[in-house]
Length: 207
Image (cartoon, rainbow, N blue to C red; front, side, top):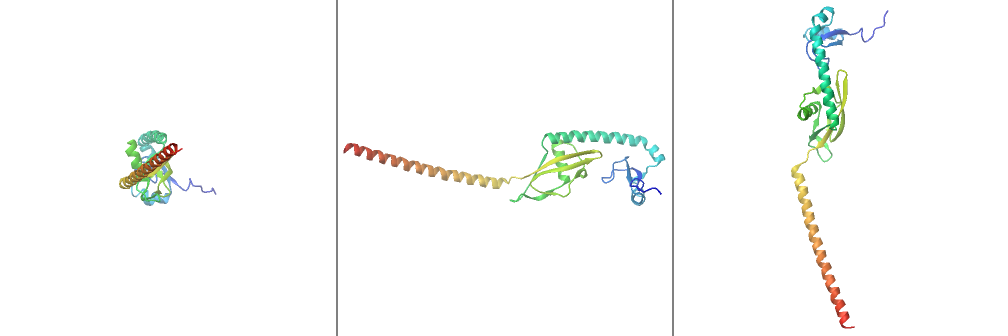
């Protein structure tokens, strides 16, 4: 009896719509038969990829394949630019311990890329084990079919303008206090010098 493998425990189906967990429209993917029968086929998400279906959808599948290749090439260019720029930077409010008030997830990364580079990227293609909740630099994995890249995400604390202004005012006050002290010291030094000169003149006079 032939040993069962992962391949003969699954069947090929043709996707009839995009699914972030399975694949893109008109792509052939492998799934478990029970999942296909109970979920994919009844909901018209996919059809069995038998000989007849492959012939019927051959043209659409070829066009979809070309489209995926173009998409992969565009993504490759995009991530080359991001790498050349040293990654992407996301600003968030944080407390004194650098913990973020609002965590960063895949949607935030995709939105930032669209904002900076003008290209939409599906957020589910970024693989985060958990949401980012601290200021810092993080490598985030991106996968699309055979394309796999690592994106550097820098999270920086948002500057509180009011707090920054208060600190600036404090520094100015310190500078003013410091200047007064310096002026006082200069005056005392001048008086001491004048006194010393008078004493020296008196000594000369009564030699």
